[in-house]
Length: 131
Image: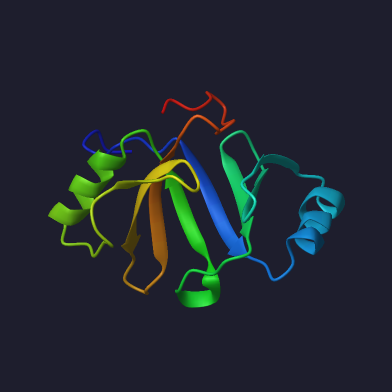
């Protein structure tokens, strides 16, 4: 990665479900993935040490209802980088109390939502949350 870019620590791909229990049976039962965080409306499963699948029962607008989330401790750096490049965002980074995250959304050229976020203290990522 070029030195002028903020670091990407982890990646979460969020998909949406009409039945979280049925989805849990698939991701945990069939695929054997460990659920690392249950936020009630979203459940996050570890795929590798730095990659996760999040399954949520609410839907964000966008193509196919998928959100790619880049996890980085430098959310503000990503916001500065993207806005200086003229990339559309939903506003400056902010704290979301419901999910204990600091984040914002950007939109890629095809309308996909790319979320940039830092988890709060509940995140069991490889290095734990840095708040």
